[in-house]
Length: 334
Image (tube, rainbow, N blue to C red; front, side, top):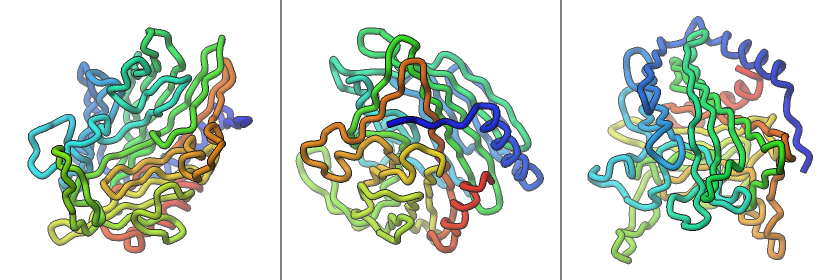
């Protein structure tokens, strides 16, 4: 697949213009740097923290709605929270990575001889036109200590009357001497692990080889109106995941930018609260027997590719929150 990437100066200009539109109405954003994280506050309240040390990949935790409601699972960062399901310890709140990169696994955290890790090499933070901006540089290191690729990640965070926004942009860069292959697997890529109360009806393991039935009230819906379990593996410009709690309805929508390779992307979205956009899993999602590498994407030696996604933390269902309209705004650079 030939990759097309907007020139850096053009992309930067478009983004600067779009975020400037929000400056007048933006909530007050404060970023505070510590040794291992950047704390993000909106109007004096915690929104999230970008944690770049202490795990096998950087991640954002917690993620909190404007009224203080946690929107991500606590485990494995906290293991003593009552009522949480303690599966998939590599599901760290909100993160980006992939399960098959040059043959190494950066998605799992117990992949043995194939285990990769993403190592931060630098972080900068600033507030620009009312938007919090975190820029991070990372190295994707194989188990032999060799750097397989690097990434340049920019996270933009802001609050508005309708909810909170987190825009995630990542440029993946191949070394000068060798290409990078993102392999076809469902285990990826831009992901969030939601709390149990947000899920539709499903069953899960209690850790003792027993299935527990959970009568959840959550809804998953994509841009075609497909709901719940059948949304898995479908292509869609956006997916919204919402549920009632304490008399309100809370939701998380994820938008796949129209400029992304393979837009609209496939979705690795599960009824047990994993919610991920994955542009590399064609064989898995479309059940292409005999074509295990159908979704492979190669970044040529010295080349790069950029992906962008938006998370929108809102109240109400997809109609009340105007998800289709919000996606059009995102596509238009707003």
